[in-house]
Image (cartoon, rainbow, N blue to C red; front, side, top):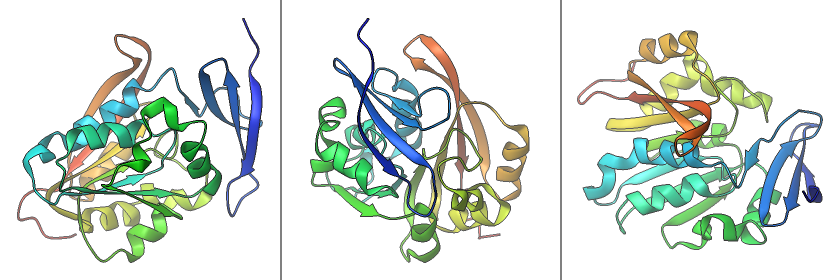
Amino acid sequence: MDPWITIDSTTVPGSDTELTLSQRNDDFAIRISGVPGDLMNSRMHHSEEALAELACSRLSTIENARILVGGLGMGFTLAAVLKTVPESAEVIVAELVPAVVEWNQGVLGQCAGRPIEDGRTRVQLGDVVDLLKHQAEKFDAILLDIDNGPEAMTSSDNEWLYSTGGLKKIYEKLRPEGIVAIWSARADQIFTTRLKKAGFIVELRTVRARPGKGSRHTIFLGQRPWGASAR
């Protein structure tokens, strides 16, 4: 088997965390230096696509839907969102690491079909935390795929997202019946309880890394009830 070759590396803004982009034949992997395993792999993205489908399935007939995707990654989540929502939708992608956007504009673009070139996509460089705190408009769906679960991994600022205060802000940023979907490598009962306390109707879905096989991942789904006020 051919070896993995590191073709680029970058530092996550505001931290000492180094991300590397590696290639082996037609496969790609994004890794955190010094941490075992892949952060993302181009061969295993079924659960990322499921994240989008579970969050956006109800939006297929909603005109002018607005979706926020936290984390561009390899583009698979974004591509799945675009397949689900109508032509009138706007999909905002918040990506903290400029190099990740550059990789998707270049060698990684082929993996997911270059979704950042879709006219409905608007890439916003910066922290999704800042966008949620300062974005005035609301969303029909918010998708978060920036860590391996409801705990900060790539940036310490992400801790706020999974806190009671962060979840309440996400709740406020959703339109009635809007959904937040959070990708996780595992279930977390404490976080499930936190979502419920923030006012969400909560559902957990288990999905595989590949169709019918591979690691089991968890999608946390939280829906804001119709007519419910912010807590």
